[in-house]
Length: 388
Image (tube, rainbow, N blue to C red; front, side, top):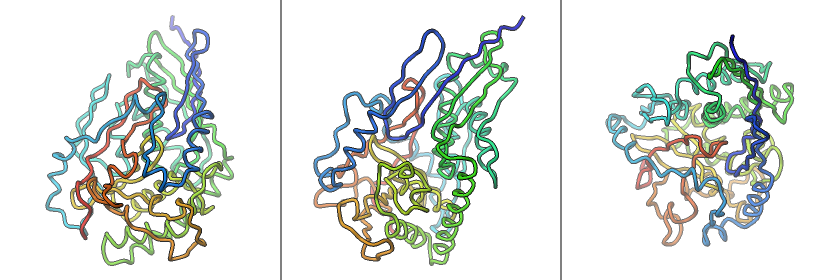
């Protein structure tokens, strides 16, 4: 007779913020709270960026990211050699990638779509979670925030690993698709058959109603498409990306502390956002013009890597917005522009004798909701800035 066990997991997703977990009784019931770390994060953000950068932000000793930090993957550079002959205007929406997983071996895959950068690093089971969430989110009208996967016993996943695998699948999805900005908190329930998970149920508990999600996402897509269409009128890829960069700098005011401060809704509709909104908007719109772009994070900041002519370059729209240093400009003011952090390399000098790497905390981290889950890898950044 089959032995069914019901387990419930509650998880908060909050990128850049540390999370504390606790086991309740003998069941696998996990609750994540980020309020304390959020307060620390906000205190950091109140400091003027110029002051913070010169002193460099110190990582708290108890910060979860110290356990999950990854250096750039040097092996990635060799994998990009096959694209050396690609011209600037022949931007390829494919990025070579091949990463091992702790418990499962990934199927070898030579190329991936730029919008699947993190998906490519998942095991087959984690991809099922990713794909199921993608399918209910990628609708002209979102009608549900939950899904269920059945007949999973053959996957051979034990219940003790489900929280790790589900968090990787969902975590990769929101990293690859910032347009699904409403995904922040979710619950995971499962039924076991013997020692293995047979049924997995996931429910997204959003801060927004389905009605608001559909209304806001249509407005977001409309504005992003308008920006992309204007960018596409420019003469080359460099100028197209520059248009997107300048538009976001001019029309977004730096703001944290509000519920909309950390997603596309705040950046593109409210014209107010923290670094998450800047970076995710740039990635979302850049992909619309077929330029591979991903978001990367440190323990306190988020920005972009862009793939051009076989190399990766950094773009930090937030740091190019003078308003983060206390200078006030009206929305749309053309004087509100800086391009010091546009398509630069790790050795590019951005201020006095400081390079991109030493100007601020640029140590990449891979945030996963559970500290013992496998993190994600990032590509190697070019040494020098992009030359059009």
